[in-house]
Length: 273
Image (tube, rainbow, N blue to C red):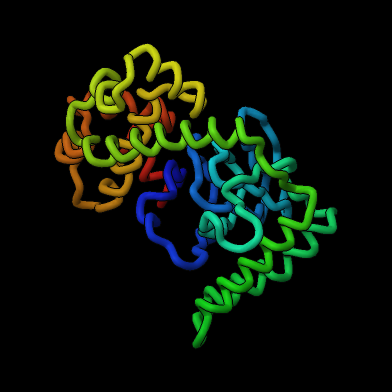
């Protein structure tokens, strides 16, 4: 099942958390507040980081730094994602001020070999949950980060890049909070731009520039993501769910669903069984 958004329940995280064995991943453009390390278990993943396109193969790692706009997409892959919280000013290196130079850590590189063992041990500790595992996983995550810091995969951002990313992050954070609170209602491009105290034209242009997709497509995907959760209940009815997710009519919901998934909601869930 595609995953549109990952961050809905991880606002307050004090230790690393994992999304295990995600198949056919589909993450829409977003800005991560964490260092995100993705291991491609099998298949191939297409990704975009800061407007540049890449392709990762099996056994590669994908590295995404905080504030970088990224998207991931694959129809034939299995991916495990490690999200590591970063705290500004912690330690001698502020990772909030760094960017990726090489988001793909290839299987054949020394850095990949260096972090693979720690990554595997972190997975084992996270699954086993033996006494003290939370300390162990956090420690292993920091060892991985130190290896990344000492590699040529990242570099400090310029003052201008930091200023621009802070402005972008502030805008997207405001939009996401507004959508999270109001997606069930009849919100629009106009109401959202007004909430952000920006002109409609500037807001529309800036959102598309930062995220790489239109505001309308992002809002529709957010609503469909919520609808998918509700539709997983075999007793759920589309006539009840579509208005709860902000769709004016069932027809609009079905048309939007087919536009994103290429099939009806009913056929989609039949394909998962």
